[in-house]
Structure formats: structure tokens, C-alpha cells
Image 1 (cartoon, each protein chain N blue to C red):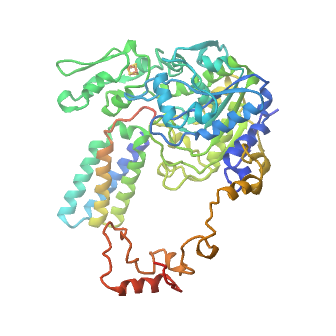
Image 2 (cartoon, rainbow over the protein chains, first blue to last red; image 1 turned 180 degrees about the horizontal axis):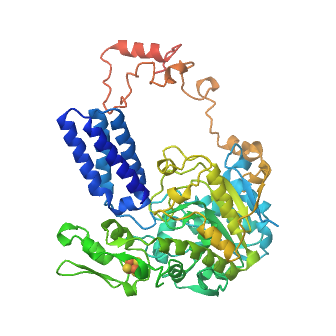
Image 3 (spheres, chains in turn orange, yellow; image 1 turned 120 degrees about the horizontal axis):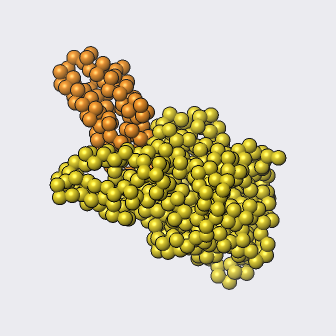
Length: 97
Length: 494
Ligand code: SF4
């Protein structure tokens, strides 16, 4: 499996595990939305190539932070990465980059 | 005997350890100048950089080398070649575009002190065919005519990463950079039934979402120089893949949409072919007539052919020279592996920033599974050179060699008479002090990391936050200012 997809899968699994421990229903809904977005992006070329590795890695790191501290600010950090992924995953590039 | 690679690190603390001086010092240590006889035409092959890239070699390196070649009796020219239309908006695919881009990037005959040439003509069909029966995958190469016509070739290479080639070193400077446009088609596997884009890429037309859902659908029809894509009235995308020549211009559009799935074998085959084509360039000029300088500085993860330059993945590695293109590239790859990655760069984001980790397989390549060794290993197989080498540390050449050549006399001899005639220092003012300044100020007050420790000058026009400072309404503020700024005020200092 491409490295970026592997990292993204780990991030998704971690967010899902973390969200089971969340008490606030609004945070649970936001975590589920983030997971949904990551799933929607996962099969794009961006994550099949190496270009997506840095952001997949950031998603994993922020997911780990959420696991360690189930706070709104950690969820916000994850949502920021999800937004960055959405803005970049469809951007045209060149084959050389 | 192992080939020698002459090396100087990238630290600099004197004129003779500047990177320009080091480039000339390793050139001499590798005895590349001995290839040049008086009157020889010497091609200096550079990468002039794509539009908006910024990590390509500063033109001063080529200038300094050209000047040195002139001192040796050679007739230098600096050159690059036309590219394939690698993207829908390429900037170097014709001689006209190449020269415009090169000029914007600083490569002109005026700055270089010798002609800057597009070596393969207006379209890129001006070339010289070479048989390479030793080739691993290619059996012929098409070398840019001006390069093939030269008596001596110096590959002045910016060593960096590359999305397709994984590394951009001496081998790629010749294996892609010295090939004409049709040579580049061959190296990229254009028309190849297995490794070419038309032959091997997985085409999924169903991934096209239709005109209404794709604002750039017209670009899909216009990205191919041969017009091989059509979006039909009933919203399907068609591709005449049999006529594809693998210019790569469509991949940046088709891959992200899922219409194409990139073919790793095409990348691998191209990386191998680069080594064969580099052999072709060496054969075209003559085995003992080609020298290599690798400037491993600003080691950006992607090539200078990208229209941007990311943070270098490792710090400057140094300056290398050799007669063996394989050895010199291997020496650079080894140096990058030994080096820690640059914090905040792609090497860190890819998890390869540790000293001892291979950097380019992940931080250079565009897709997974490529290797920084493919081109190097292939160039061993085809006999172009040797991975094994002796790294020779070169001593600095001394400051005398790198003084300002137009006038190497010391200061008084150069400027004594001039300054007497056109006095630049107004000695007649302020009792010989020349200028209006305070006798003493509290300098420690402006060194604090949190900002100045004196009040803002009452007449300062701006605060720095964009607002204007009001003029003082009475004399107190001015008094306070003087107290804050000057340890000893004197009249007329304001
Ligand atoms: S279809 Fe082939 S020739 Fe046309 S743009 Fe794509 S790679 Fe180039």
C-alpha cells in the first residue's frame, strides 16, 4: 500500500478510537466529519504518490495528539490539516513534482 | 584504479573558500583544464532553471568557469536545451522560450561573458545521432548539435533531487539536458510499447466527472501537443493513446483526476535510459573530452525544471569535480546520505532526515518505489563509469588566485589619487568628523530581543505598526527623547 495511504489509515483509525472516548457530542460529530473527509480523500492520486506523505503524516501526528489529549483544540488542529488536505489533494501538478 | 572525485566542503570564510573559488579549485585539481587546447570550443552545459524556480545555479558559477576557460585558451559557450512540454504551461520548450526564461534567470551572453546558446535549435531537432550498442535500454541517442560539435564539454551541474530521475546530477545533466528534444522523447520512453505513457499507463475514462463538474475540462483537451484528448458531446473523455509520444504534459492533469494511473516502470525505465543517453553524449564529444563539476548546494528536493524551489533537504554538501560522471554522482548521493536533513524540509516530512538515511528515494522521487541508484547503476552497466571512487579532499588555493582580476593592485595604489581628486569624505565639516552625529548613545537600548528600550523619537514619522506618530504638542516629549537616546546631548543635534 502506498506510504501516504498507510499513514492516512492510521490517522483515521486513531481518530475513530479517540472519538469513542469523547464526552461532548458536538466533538464526536466533528471528529466523525473529519474521518469522513479523510476517507473521501484517501483514494486520490495525491495519496497514492509521495506528494501526499507530508500531509498524511501531519494527519497522523495530530490524530495521535487527539488520542493523548481529547480536547477541542487538538480536534481543531486535526480539522486544520483536513482543510489543508482538501485544498491540495486535487491541485494539478506536473509529473516531475 | 578507482576514479578520483575531487571535493571541497561548502564552508566558507575567505575569498579562496568561496564556492566560486572552490569550483575553480576542484576544476584544476581534477585537471579538467588539461582537456582544453588553445582554440578549442568548450561547451559548458548548465540547467538555466524553469520560470519561477530559484535554486538553480547562480550564473556567476558559469561566468567564472567561462573566464577560466578563456584563460586556458578555450572558446567557451554556455548552453541548455529545449524541453519536452512537460506541463500544459512549460517555459523552455522552444529556443525562444528557453532564452527568455534563461535571461530572466540571469543567463545571458552579457552576464556570462560568452555566448549563451540553445544547443538543440529552435524546436529541438538540431542534433547528432550516436549509436550506443552498450546501452542497457537505449541503442541510440540524439545529442544536441552544439554540444556534439564542441571540442570539450564541461557539465556544470546543480546537484539536487528530481521527481522522475530521483536525483538530478551529472548523469541527468547529460542524459536529459544534453539530449535534443527528440533525444528526450526517446529517454522518456516515447512510443515504447511497454514503458511509454501511451503503451503502459492505465486509462480510466470513467474517472472524468464531466464538463459540468470539471471547470478545467478544456485544459484536458489542450494539454497535449498532439491534441490526443477529446471531450465528447456526451461528456466522455477519449484518448488516442497509440499516437502518444510521452511528453508527460498531461500527467499532471490526468493523475490527480484518477483518469491515469502512473506507471512506475515508465519512471524506472527513464531513469535507466538517462544513463544510456549520458553515455551517448560522452561518446559524441569524446571520452577524454568531458569533465564534470557538481555543485551540491541548495539541494532542493525537486529539479530546477519545476516552477518552484522548496527548502533544501540537506545543507550545502560541497563542490565536486571528476572525469567520471558515475563516481561524482555517487559521491554526492553518499554525501547527502551522511548528512542530517534540513529541519522543516521535505526530508524531515518524509522521515528521512537522519544522518545515514537515503534522502532522495522519498524526498526526491514523485512516486514510491523509485531508487536514487537506478541511473548510477545503469551507468556502471553500460560502462560509462564507476560507483567506486576515491574522494580526494582538495586544499584551498590561496587568496592571491581569487583577487579582483580587473585591478589586483592594493588599495592606496588604486584609490589614492582618485580620492584626492574626488574627495568622498567631507573633512571640512564638524571639526574634521565629516558628518552630523551624536557623540555617544546608549547602544544597548536597541539590542534587546523584545524591542528598543528607549522611547520612540517624537519626530519619527511611523511607529512601525503603520500609524503616524503625532508631532509633540510641547517641549516635554522632545526632552524625554533626548534623555532616552543620548547619553550626552549637545545643542543642534536634533
Ligand atoms: S497523451 Fe502523450 S503526447 Fe499527449 S500530452 Fe499525454 S504524454 Fe504527451
